[in-house]
Length: 299
Image 1: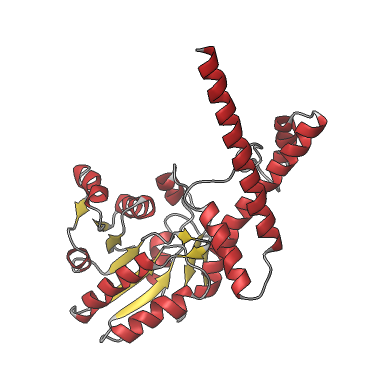
Image 2: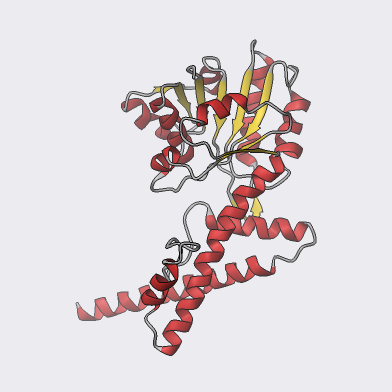
């Protein structure tokens, strides 16, 4: 496999792991982020960095877009995607050659087609398929082990709306796994959300089992262990007493629940998952307050 020249647009947890991973695989990588504090540590480690998006993309043929898509009031926030699309369009309009844009940001079904591609085709004077192309490559990286997860993927998902667009990415990822699924934008988008929401459901399920255990005087850790040893289930998410948190599970579960409502589908199960998680959050917060009071009294 040949060496690719890659720019990372958005150098947070996902972008940093993606760039460092491909760099270790032998590709030429340059990092860019609007926040200089994210670039500085990478530069200190010896990685190539750029001060502008144009500087990064002008030296490369593939760009991985890894900006955040937070959830605000249960709705997907695409403001960072919009900001980067504006910059991408400006770059493409003033550049020669061909560029592959690979979006890794978590996005609800239809966002790639109706928002990302639609924007680029309306605002780029250059022609898609001739001067640039667009793929979707959702990430499945945990916050505290993102680089390790990059090198040990359970699967790689590539979304495209034109056959053959993902061929260069398939070649790059084959060094890591042969479990590569090429599918539509919409299926790839939903695979990411379905994966995260299932993990949220699993955590909430075992939190509810933990409530039952405490009610009848059973050790929830023994129950969780006994269930987790079933190879169909596994250990992750079976520890009762902790809400699901982090950067992805809460926001993605809320966003998919709101998305379902917009499509006249009641998110009955996801709403229960969110309600149980809120209950566990409240219980945890109360215990922390009580523990703090006890410690202050003992002092």
